Image (cartoon, rainbow, N blue to C red; front, top):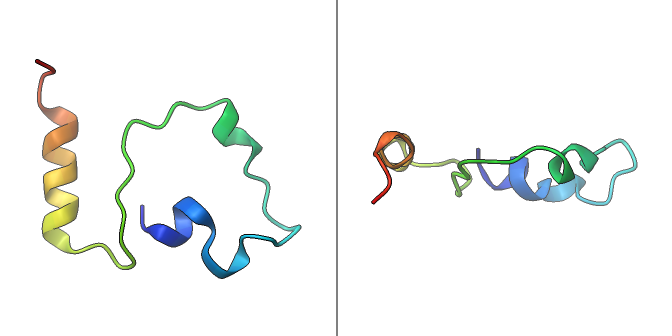
Length: 53
């Protein structure tokens, strides 16, 4: 959740980050924003729980 978690923000080029797990793990939901608005979070979870058409 949030831009820093997705893109690593100011730490994007840091050698301390290991983001290789993203190649192995399927992500169902990205919530953009820094800090995400509460209604954005609620709508994202509602979208995630709604059945696909």
